[in-house]
View 1: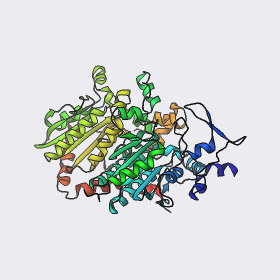
View 2: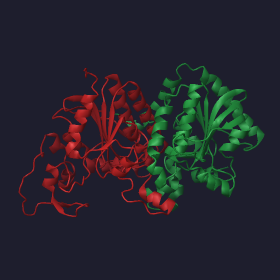
View 3: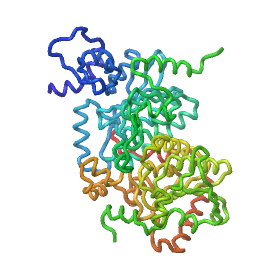
View 4: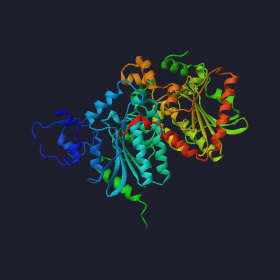
Length: 286
Length: 263
């Protein structure tokens, strides 16, 4: 039970809990090793700094924590939380896997959708969850994203989306693949309605999500050091039998090749999104 | 009689099957190939241009695997680069401008995975096709004639009608890839092929395709004649559809809706 509570920080966060951390380091406080600078960083310090190491390394973040970081206080209203994966193909082991992941992550699906205020600008917000089957897109994720864009068209709202995904969810076979077409069509309608869509690519954004709504935004932002690509690096190495260039598929590399507008560290994301939303609110008259 | 899904996969990959250009040459007349994406390069894995279906001008696009070993290498084994998808989109936009229907033949193990393809935005190229095809104002018919490998196939299959040859397969991932990710054992590809529901019958029962095309006399005149007649009849219906774009949206919109739990 204790373990499950540890893995479920969402309730604590939703109550507006642990935003500030104790300053001094307690003896025996849990620490996390930063894979970049290799130092042991007290967990409380990471939490106080939105899971960013003092060296600038961005740890993976749970979707609820991200919403807490980006949305104005108490402004997030979740939608479509009833939409969950079923097992349409009777795929071996899929049902059990989903159940296990639900308990461990405290989430029902790999994306959380809703409306929110960001810097007092109203928008639709979706945040994908890496702790739920690595944010893989099955029918439920596709349906939720599509419904959110349709809602945004109807209410003439911009969409802000944080992507993290290993790609399409293979346990739902062709139905997962078709979600790429379905979400893309919904994004196109939103775009054709003259509305703004900002995607923030976080670590990792790959496969079918990269090849659909992640790369279809008007403005594509990314977190520093995030893996962004279509095919997996290991698969490419095996296929081409060549070693990969330095920084391959890191957001900095992808920006250099022209597919990302800007890399924004977490500390700046809310400010940046607020500015962008304000500049596109359609009310500016000189 | 073919029993297992994995045998279908092997059949779909068979080198002796007709390839994209065979379909273009035998179904259409007066094909004129158009090369290049006007941005970077021409991708030989995707062939496209204008042709006549009976007497009616259409835009045809096909993924080409090649017939001989040399050709196959030149065609990159039918694994398109981003430029291939960008060329396809350029030709589709051109078709829209001149009011020509679009017919695609799909046969690929998937979009090419390589360093250059990533550097030039493979994911972005596919995404753009999915997005733009959803609102093209001319009819689109896509036929999966061999392998339908994931996003690389879907990037030419956001269509009003999607058909499959009876031994073609259409899948989100190759059975080998699925087995090695899920069970760390690519030898379990047979189980994966079964579980992925990738045959033409499966795709039809999932509502992903409209029609299964018989492979009787495959590669012979009768076979191509049959497809020509079907295409002509279907285009006659689609050309009259005044809600074409809305119907295409709904076609994809409904897929997967019944596969989720909404309690």
